[in-house]
Image 1 (cartoon, rainbow, N blue to C red):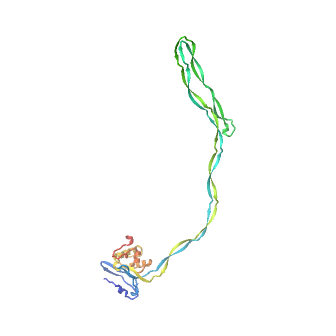
Image 2 (tube, one colour; image 1 turned 120 degrees about the vertical axis):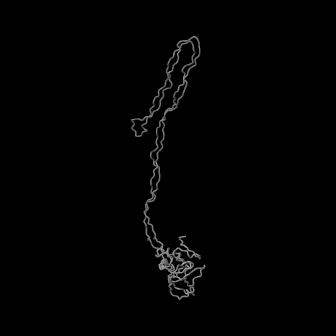
Image 3 (cartoon, rainbow, N blue to C red; image 1 turned 45 degrees about the vertical axis):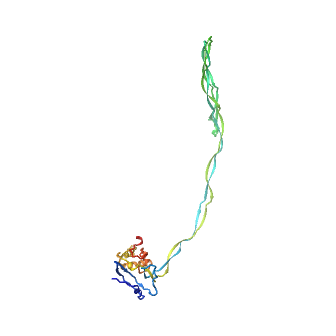
Length: 348
């Protein structure tokens, strides 16, 4: 059974609290539901909803909730106090050169310098072959004279604590070198010249002294070591620091206007309230713990109680499926004028 109340007849009722029952009717295969809490009818001649910018909009006279504003206040968290800080001493590392050993003079033995040379030594003089007779004579010939060389030694009977004082130089004799040669000695003169035999020479290698050994004084420079040490830059001290009080910002709701009055609010038009929409609203209220009934798309007592409790808890207009309530539930049914089966914003 279809039952529609015209706006003119509805607003012509006397001003008193009217209880409107749930009216279910079917138009174009959709179930349209009117679900109203007690309303106060406004005087039609005085209060009218403001003209909307779009057509096909519905408005209802609903009880308004309390209006609050957020007020920021400063809450003391910690009192101001004076903090004592012990500042340790400050040191700085510096590097300096420290004498480890003074400079000194050392005696250094410079050995002699020799050179090896080669020279031709006459072995056999030029001779003539005559009828003379000769005899070979062996002689010892001096090759180099006797010489000497320095040898560094340590005196075993030295009593000095400085090892350099116990060094002595010994001049060692190098004996002369001799070589054995054989020469021919004429023993009998001949009378007839035969031929000339050239002289014979031999290459002899010998060592020749170029520079004798000597002792030199060598200066050993002083030895230093880098030492790192800590130098006091600033002594330890105590500082007193004033720490201001700590506050935190607390947001509190402050009542701006008491609710209970009535005003025009935009609602979901009856011809757009389908069974699917009611089921989506029931499911959302069930998920949030306000609805305990079946998700059947029928506005029953449990559905009306869940909507009323949700609106009062969240300070929304009471009594209708208004725009603020639908937006709070996550629906956007009132964003356009087309008759669509919208889903919650979270499902898009």
